[in-house]
Length: 163
Length: 163
Length: 84
Length: 84
Image (cartoon, rainbow over all chains, first blue to last red; front, side):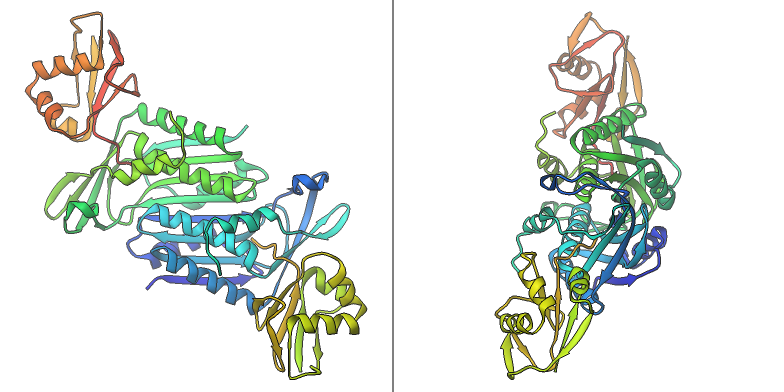
């Protein structure tokens, strides 16, 4: 049975602690992949929007309590049914963040590297478009909701799952 | 100009230090991927060899000093020319290791996650088959050199580079 | 009674994060509910007719407009997700 | 003089990690060098004729058997890599 843990929290996370947890829970793992998403200071819109890049001063993350955890559990289960994972870990922060802050952590452990890499990428692709989180950016010109990128929806297609 | 650092060392490495180094050197990164390879205790041969899995007691890593660093530099340059990376880090250990020890670290930082994921996977695929490292396993039945897996050479083909 | 939640830009446009609604029929579709809310609420009409994508979840699962809505359900309206 | 290095299983089979060799000609190919070493050294003949893959680097770059070898070059023989 694979170990999996999901957390939605306001507080920051410590990558090192999460790595040691994965190593400990995974047993005889040969490969561990950790992904972290950070708040970028310069936010470029999609090329077709013809906007100047904005300097981000802050980011507020809203979510749908209850549904978020349910979605992340489902995404983790999907990854576990697709790859022979020994352990998975997802942390997503909510609330107010500033540039260079950590937003999200996805960690996967497996016997071999390809499963760990593919599952981590799959978890991020699904999390980006299927889990109910919304980002609002604060710039010098005011606040606005980040619009979803078509490229993120397209990315899911590569997993060829119809669900 | 992207930051890149390569180290071949006997001593262990601290993932957290390497992560903070990548964050610091990468500037305005939105995505950081860290991969670690660990010594597994149960080593299964390729299915077609029809061998029982062996319990590994130790692993000795030999390398070709000079050529190793040169190869890893070339691999990092290839990754940098293919993806818009902000920082890359490779650490490979040599000498005697035991199960659950860290063997290798690959870290990539980029503005967006797909470049960071793809580059980290590319670096590992190339490192496995192009950098002059060799593993010798110690088991209860004696010592033997690990033979290269055809699957590792096949994995390189997906990058469709003829070099 | 139906509990309706609004999130992100939809929440701001609706000027509230949730509301309760008595269903005029025992069961209706999500599409029927959207039409009902558009008739009753100018803010909702604006959101619905803005042309921006509007997603719906019933009992915390994403559904399309043909999905049934029953008394006691939790319905949520929100824009496409932008987490990660 | 040529400096020849052996690594991993090849080093063990050769019972040494390196050797020096005077080239009989100013330039020869890697293939020619392999034949020369096979004639001169029973251990090298065993390695070469074992049927296991044998890789060659000249001046720390992987090459094939048609690559030239000149006086002063560093040549290395080793099995396929198994790092990572």
